[in-house]
Image 1 (spheres, rainbow, N blue to C red):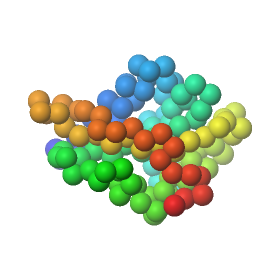
Image 2: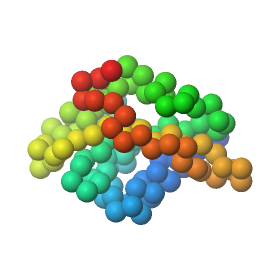
Image 3: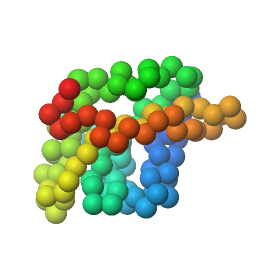
Length: 126
């Protein structure tokens, strides 16, 4: 596993722990299906959040983080979320949201949250 991939995995773990510390219940990590992968599925309060974690080593984020999850990625996440809900019918009536966590390296080489964008895009794609 290369350094970049290790950092991406570290970022996903960090975000999951961060959301759990805020009272979130992590239901799935790296959930895979034919439509793609969902990094995290977390229940935050009464909302089921499908969280895409984007990790970059530098400070190369655009101002809103929109470029990190473009239209093609959004469509893949929408399909994966639909398949997740089909596989978990007990969650099918949940209020759902698509969030994006932008993560970077802190000066010591660890993980830092650059931004957490709740409701980063709508269920219809962008």
